[in-house]
Image (tube, rainbow, N blue to C red):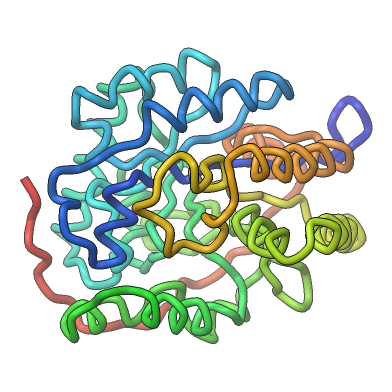
Length: 336
């Protein structure tokens, strides 16, 4: 569906992963104190978006919303007109291991904390590390969610997982826990376009994180920053090409941001292991300016909820049966 300016719609979201969640996933000590950079990155992102007249969706981690020290930053998100989504409570990228009762608690707990902190109750969900299962989808549908955004249709998931295992400090038990992180080969066979999951509770709209149609190569902004570290010109060319391919195949992209897209080595050194954290914030923000300018040139950029509304009104979405790898479910220790 075209916007009023004649450009096709696209959506933009930011997974508001906090410092502690990166440390936890990496196996670093000290994450249990929930160190935060939200008071630094959220105002920076909000100013950046305001200067470009962009309104997006922020997927918020429930544990951050439950802490009073983060409330001012999170309240500013909705005060600036942005949409909020649920990014789980504990930000553990292995939701496939949760039992049905644990999933219900995890999603509801995050939902309540986000509503309390921001004033808005989320109706969209993205699993951390793109973790999703049929049980997750069924809980979301029962709780009245409008859409899920947890699939990442690329064949490169196993490669990303290998790099993660190489750089992380993990015990054998933690490696087993994370063995499906970023998905397997099956993820590359999923659609890059919006569709609906066919569930016993009724259909649920799925908005994949867009990868390049046909070849399924990623081009979200963290990946572009990684490429820009080798050649900014190459990264810009790659992004233009990916967006052009989307327009050729009539895919309205849903693009993904992360906080580290706006933070540099001069902001914090605890995440120096992460790709793209070897350059300054000033350099990185310059790259982001170029990328988002190109995105807005080819598409009208809107929050995910508006994007979903537009697509659902414009066409009948295909129904897809949920098929996922099914690891043996185990009880996941609760965090207070």
